[in-house]
Image 1 (spheres, rainbow, N blue to C red):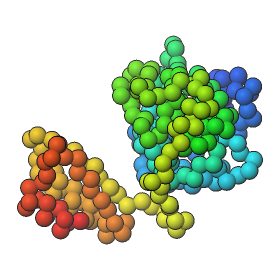
Image 2: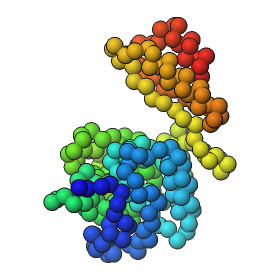
Image 3: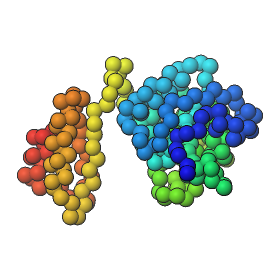
Image 4: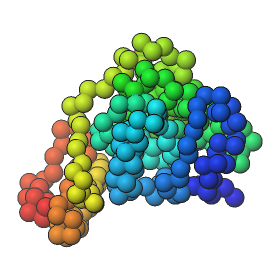
Length: 243
């Protein structure tokens, strides 16, 4: 009977009264949706709100609660678009709040705890789940239901030292600046091509994006190909023409 995105910020905080011992928290709800429904338009709104908070001298750190389905995508988008001068930590829960042993409260507590550490500011966007600190550049959901679904060998313990956090300092080679006048992001489709995939899919997507580019002023297609494979020359030409 659980429905995602229904708990208000006050309810999340009430479930973890120990948060009051860590910081004074001002909680706001920006979106109340299932994370599978996140879109680049949501990212644009979120990034601008986060940057405003980053630039506010009254704010010492930021924690974002998010669903697990698209956590890694949102985290990386923020990682390459936000000028992080303060800790920015994301967290989520694999089990619903109504579960017998919900993991959300502890994840939230540890996320706020990390956001209170100035050393976390140098690492870019971080996520805290399952007793682990995960950098946005390497975070990925690796299991559909396990509590430690995001954990990998390079993850840090939530007890990691400041020196270990400093070592996560990101290379900003992929930093993207979003001009203030940008209100929408052009569509980009990701198409995985494997053995037996129909070339018609790529052609159909290219035609759809060609139409979308007339509305958005641009569009893109990313083809994930196996090994050293490439598209047949005739289809490659059609895709280029369509885009």
